[in-house]
Length: 113
Image (cartoon, rainbow, N blue to C red; front, side, top):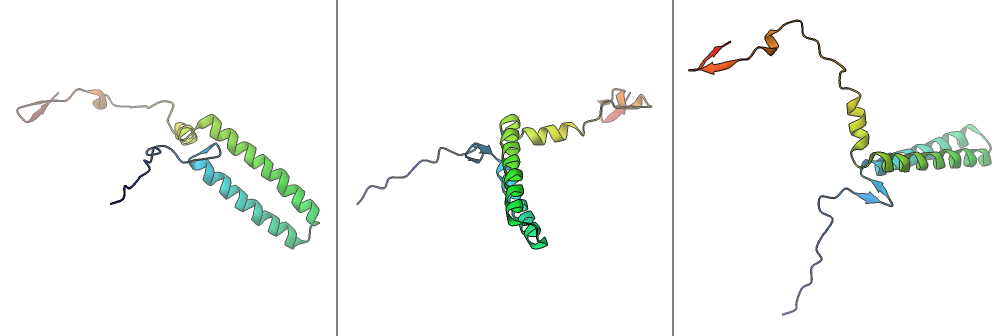
């Protein structure tokens, strides 16, 4: 019988990472690059000079890559989602009734206040 050698996967429960980009930022970059490809096609079909099209797409591509890498480094794997969720938290909760804060207790299956 031959001995089998199996590699241990040490990346379990770790976020996906590609060249420094973490988790969802890979998808943001891919979506942005596809959008730039479509923009180039639209500009070229309209009849704009190809050198202007390439220059515009290169500049926008560099800006996109820098912004996505900056967001990945600043917020990490879940940080941007947490920041967006934090905006939806209300500053204050108002209640016109004290019933919400009255203590309810159970005595023999009956609720008393």
